[in-house]
Amino acid sequence: MSTPKDTAPAQASNFLKNIIERDLETGTYASRRWAGSPGDAAHQSAGQPDPAKIRTRFPPEPNGYLHIGHAKSICLNFGLARDYGGVCHMRFDDTNPEKEEQEYVDSIVDAVKWLGFGWEANNDSHLYFASDYFEFMYRAAQYLIEAGLAYVDAQSAEEMRANRGTLTEPGKDSPWRNRPAAESLQLFAEMREGKHADGSLILRAKIDMASPNINLRDPAIYRIRHAEHHRTGDTWCVYPMYTFAHPIEDALEQITHSICTLEFEDQRPFYDWLLERLADGGLLAKPLPHQYEFARLNVTYVITSKRKLKQLVDEKHVDGWDDPRMPTIVGLRRRGYTPEALQLFCERTGTTKSSSLIDYSSLEIALRDDLEGKAARAMVVLDPVKLKLTNWNDVFGAGHVEPCSAPVHPHHEEMGRRQFNLTPEIWIEREDFMEEPPKGYHRLTPPRTDAAGVEVAGSMSRLKYGYVIRCTGCEKDAGGQVTAVLAEIVPDTKSGTPGADSVKVKGVLTWVSASEGTSAEVRLYDRLFSEAHPDAGGRDFLEALNPQSKQVVTAFVEPGLAAAPAGTSFQFERHGYFVADSQDHQPGHIVFNRTTTLKDSWAK
Image 1 (tube, rainbow, N blue to C red):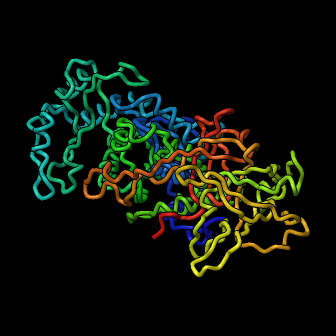
Image 2 (spheres, helix red, strand yellow):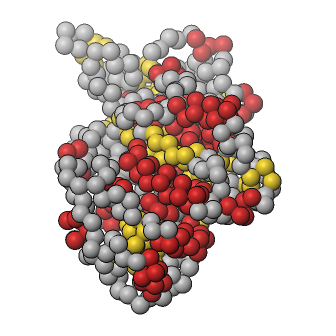
Image 3 (cartoon, one colour):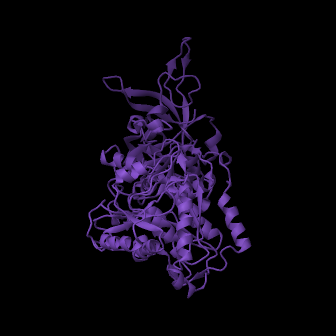
């Protein structure tokens, strides 16, 4: 059972493919050379014609765990390189030592590989770090100073902000804007040597303080930070700004199509300004990379702000970065999402320059479409009540167990069959028995007298893969709670035998043997937020937390599930898709997480 596949588009638009195809047709980057590693103009000129038709990159900052939005960028950059005979570089933008850690580097590498992508191509590994380029970036900054295109400013951050101007008013020149190049070079060297305090000096590009684009009003390109870097230690105490470092990284790596989200669109003029001047100075090889922007992935019922996600973790609203309710890749993975499902979802959402909000149900549809064809089936009772088959000994004899079997997957015979036994006492779902049933209820009801005074026999239902049974009553505790349902087997009605069709019933019950089934902890996860736009309008997103996003129940599962490896997905018949938890599931402690229901329970 799954959601119809035509509820999502088979193929969505991607304007970047048109750009790449045009560039390949016109030979925009045909003259590039590649010396086997990133490098400046002299280094690349000694190389061979680039074997990669295009080069893209996935450039995360290692300051947190990747989330569903990053999955879009991963699939886009690696996917385009794959589709057009190119190479995608895995590059860490590690230019901010105060927020970056090796833990995040490791988690990002793991996430990208798990999604199904790699950076080995043409007998080379294309794993790079911006910190490896610090020496070149410093040299590039020196060149800009020497060319009269940068200067060391001594204004405070507040003064720079005040003099920057507004969208309608030009900025004001810094008093140090015309500082002699030799003086700026000396101060810049002293900054590197650690002779000045954080914030006391800053290197700025000299462009145009009256530019209508505020990003061109002498942007900062180097700041002082006396901080330990996770890779370079205390070698450096000056670090490049992201807007300065990123285009240089692209150029050194011979990137052709630098793909980023729309918030960087206003930065593109500086991206181009910087690379053109460094190329004119002979530092970088042409043709230069070009930046393209696309609309970021926004999903309802989800937040992707790293700050807010960290708040959820730090304040223990969730159980860590890999909590299955989190939109992090580690969380989605633990929830039971597959790499194929995330790739399918990212492909279906398309790539455009128009911002849009994707409904969370689209993510679940992609998952169901992937798991429907490959997840093994199993019977599980989530809200158990015991059912006693009172005529068992009369039908089979004391001590008998009745073997039953079912396909591992109803559409894939090659996956085999699963075996389990029907026994005198079994577990069924509590909702499968009602003393006073509503109209249209087709499961178990006891003999009763209806409103018209007519005697009504107990109802009949089929135990899936087993026999038809007739309800005869129930047992209750002192408080009136049903403790057991009573029923009789209807002989010669077992599924798969000639008598299976001799009795027609509408209700079919899933069940688990009370003596042979296994107890399991099942975590029923749902959406973390109860509102589609949890942080809209600057509201406190914590107010939209869904109190029912995690419920833990003790369930009973088919005996075979006791040996299910961690991370294995199943369709629990009638309930949805579940996965053996990757952290807590182990022999003697069986734990399953609900990945998604069989259909959208949030549909209006």
